[in-house]
Amino acid sequence: MHKVAELANLIRQESPDGVLGITQEQISEIQEAWGVPRLPSAYVEFLALMGARAGRMLRGTDAFYPVLLRIKEWADDFFDENADVISLPESAVVFAMHQGYLAYCMSDVSVPDPEVILYSEAVSMPLRVWPTFTAFLNAHYLDEPGVK
Image (cartoon, rainbow, N blue to C red; front, side, top):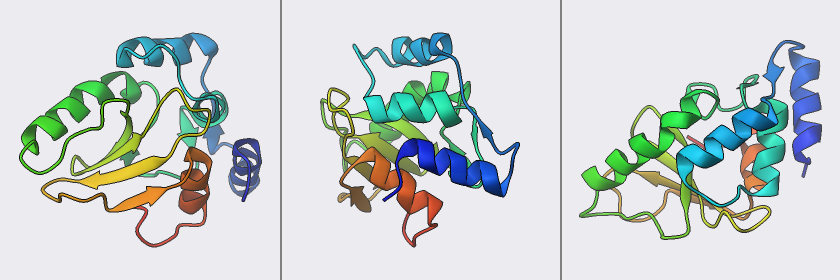
């Protein structure tokens, strides 16, 4: 499994302009917008290296700055609209959404490399669970079936 920095380098080799990170100030904006005391270190590394653009990874998914500043609002709407079927675990935070019907959550932001859970509207069980955020990124890089 590739580390976050290795994935950024691989994508950069495919497309030199395909990777763009964000600043520490912008990362702090995201943390503040989400109302969390900290962000997982693996996710912070992703943001610093690929927080604005990650080549073909997560294409078509709202997962990049500055859209991330509004993701909590959209996630709240997603889980409110699907409250009869699914609920966001208390320690979880949504970090990406795909076309309004899929929500990607980190299970616990206090963990350095948290589990990632994929929820779909009107479906009671998660569609997929990755053991870590890094594993989630690797699955997207490899374009595995069921990542979106």
